[in-house]
Length: 116
Image 1 (cartoon, helix red, strand yellow):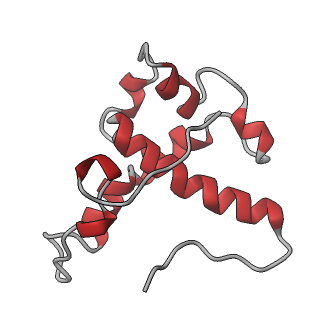
Image 2 (spheres, helix red, strand yellow):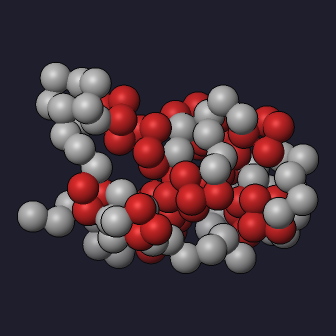
């Protein structure tokens, strides 16, 4: 059964924060941003990476967060792939393969809208 972030009905700001947290983690994986390289990636020439990490743009303000919100998520817990692998991946007791939880460009169905 498909599972995802769930929040109390009527709390639109929290819903947007939960939704964009997941989207940011998926975007980070697709863009090659990890917990190990996130600091260096702030210097990337890629505008998508710059927006994601809050170097450019003001996306955070739109959801009521600082502009480095996605940087902080990736720095503290990692991108989607890192979190999946650490909690349920092949090297855990659950040993679950990514399968459909892989990125769209790696045979899965995960795709996140860009941070803009």
